[in-house]
Amino acid sequence: MQENNFPKLHNASWPGVVGKGPDSEPTISIDTMIDLTANAAVEGVKFDGFDLFLFEPHLDINASDDGIKIIADKARAKNLEIGSLVAPVWAPVGGGSAMGSKAERDKFLEQIKKSSKIGYKLRELGVRPHGVIRIDSSADPASWAKDPVGNTKLIAQTFREACDIAADYGESLAAEGEICWGGMHGWKAMVDTLEAVNRPNIGFQADMAHTLLYLLGYNKPDERILPKDFQWEDRATLTEGLKTLTAALRPWTIDFHVAQNDGTVFGAGSHDKTGRHCLASDPNGKLNITEDAGFWLRDDQGELTKKFKHICWDGCMFPNEVMMQPKTWNDILKAMINVRQKHGWYEAE
Image (cartoon, rainbow, N blue to C red; front, side, top):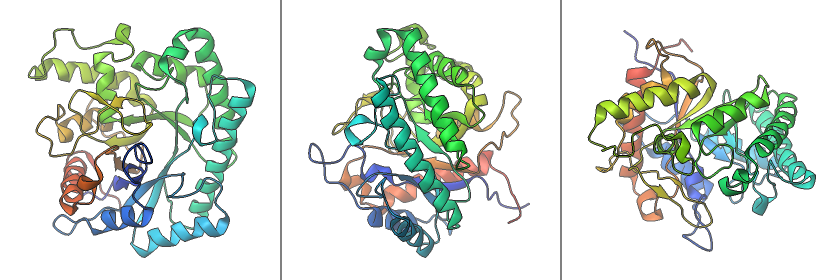
């Protein structure tokens, strides 16, 4: 029997940037994040690649072809692929609200165009065989709630235009379900938004840490799945909740983050509070990472969906001291390997 070699195992580079900066800890360079990823190993198995945030100091969204080639060469030098890309769609970094004024929405779309060009170039350079572009609404839930119908309509319109731009470059967009983004802050709201977009190249990016908060109705109490008196020791009820959640969102899922959550929210630096990412070995983690990944990677009949060629670990807002320890990444890689062993497959390459 062949050892599973799919989905490929990726690390995220953006924990070196997200939640860092002047109002938090210093950023960690892309070179360091690549080295930490490349140096991790568990019984001879290593990460296959990394997913990339298109933001300085990792990769400038306005990077030239030469700048894009430099990061492609860095990945290739470490025998790593580049997978999904995070588009910087937020107003403070050059984007704008997807439900904002025309000027704001135009800025959002400009960031999608720049991201799609980079994605295309990385594929052309041969270092990005698969992956999507991650987006969100760049709007907060409170603002969305002032006009749920109208704002969802605006977000969907912006996302449709974004999909058309991405399609010109052969790219697909994945909307990440985080409780801090308006129109995406509840599981039903997320489905409503995706259905309203009605484009073939949009889907959902499921992050195990973020989506766990959907079950509790954070920021969207009317969409709570678990009972208000729920206790985390009640694994049977949690399992049923995960089944309900994934039945609705799995059909849309085109990108997947393995992660752990302790049932709380957290924000660092300028990042709004969202589902807290915990270490794979955190004793307070509420998920059984290996088992619960299966709700996203297998359909209702237990068959593998094989809808994406790689999965990524996401551990945003870990302290720098933790991120600089090799054990952190070896433990994470081990968790990823366990997921692939249980829910992966083999393909001749």
